[in-house]
Length: 307
Image 1 (cartoon, rainbow, N blue to C red):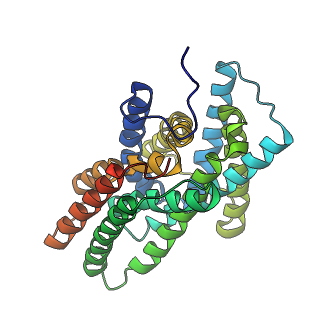
Image 2 (image 1 turned 60 degrees about the vertical axis):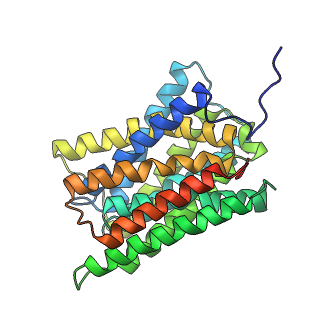
């Protein structure tokens, strides 16, 4: 009889870990480009709202398909509300706005640093250890991100607001990290995953809608096929399918190692940005990308970077 798996002790080479890990990276690597189209004709706040209204319905349907009750405890509802605020309101409201100032690939590469605040917050909140190798690798990755952002700043038109985009991305990064660490806590692991996410998305969508109405006015929607399909892709594929897989990885690998799919996501996102957004590479950008990926790989190879 095998011993039950302890939180944070799963291994990357297990098929049940590697499969979801790669799938989440591939899907999220493509969502950054789809988000770019979502903010062209509809205010970002309303695009976020439509995404999570559909996602909440989809997640509720998934729970019913799996014959899981949508009833959760009062504690579970509080966790879902906090998760909804951090992940499905703050994180995405910041990210969608950031993409009005930065290319989607750059935002994705910036988000590759999610592993750093994840591990540091897990160390502070959950007492999960952080090694010197992890810190060194993260520093190298941070230097690479800095070079990419410097390239973006130099290439921006005079009226560009790159610094605003960087600030918004950083705020989204911190919000997502807080949500990740919340998912790794003992109380979150005690709540059924799918029902909790359904409630978190519903609560998040309600807050998103209230915020959008207050800031942008009455509801706005775009009936273009690309916009409608984009909402469906981001809601169902980019949210209903991926978030349960990702948060389960967080619980099994730990908040630090669970964010390592950020090594693959920006590679996919930068390739798509080059093909569809006309991202212009320079020696500075190539050096920054290489450093960022090298640093993340070094952090990944560090022993027990954050269980």
